[in-house]
Length: 380
Image (cartoon, rainbow, N blue to C red; front, top):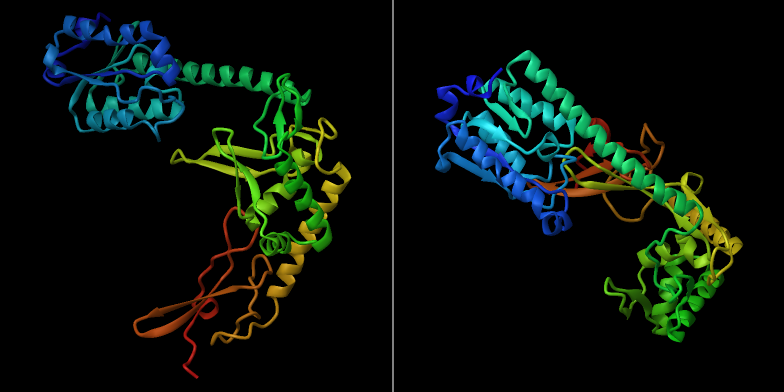
């Protein structure tokens, strides 16, 4: 069907939205020809009957990936205006500019069909309310999402191949550094090396991360920390830093890749989940010089795990303070661990809440049965 036949007077009475996007800031700076082609779609809208002042350019998503609409404010505004019936036509150079996610693309198509809004790309004008056009647009969206998957798979495959050979260059923790040839060596700073060696010697002596922190504070020692600009500063040692150093295999001279799994949630936020040693894509012991041996590293991990088990056992004893009746005795019916107790003053009375927030699961145990988790202890 001819494009001018699809464009009706009620379409021209509304605004024409031109959506412009580049996937990265590097593309924004270097791929200027693509930007010119996208902005040139204004001429297509004018040729179809829209006045220049009716054309609204949405270009505040420059440098944003089209994999999701969660972080694209411009796309969210576009969908909102289409749903409110303000748009007569939505223009994009190609489907991949509007969305690389088929779910976002199908949602836009559905809203456009309900609002009687046309879609224009470099190939022509489409009416999402029509079956043939909707089928073609849906196929384009599927191909766009598949194209992104293929690109990512190729890049990921190359990285994994290099990582399995130990050749992929990863950021190093404080202590190991890259030399001029790209090999991993110990930090040339003597103070950094001696402090890290003393850290592992102290842990081997006291057998606890928290006790190692106390020993450093007692001796007045600071621990090295590398900033983002590669500058090394010395700061007081904390328990989180001590545990992180003890768990990092690079200090044992092992090349490790993929220790954490990253994924995005429905709201666009990135979540991190630690993987077990068996799930690492690459782990090569004795790949470069280290501060301790691989066997010592494994022994340190066993000590940390045993310390955590002893902590749980200690928490099962009866605390000395607190008016809650079942403090230290009530256990969770899902994971079998002892409840923590939280106190709150509400409506002039003190309430005790028994909460299980230590279970290693995706969803914490938080069933709030009034007879079990919520109690009002007496003042006596």
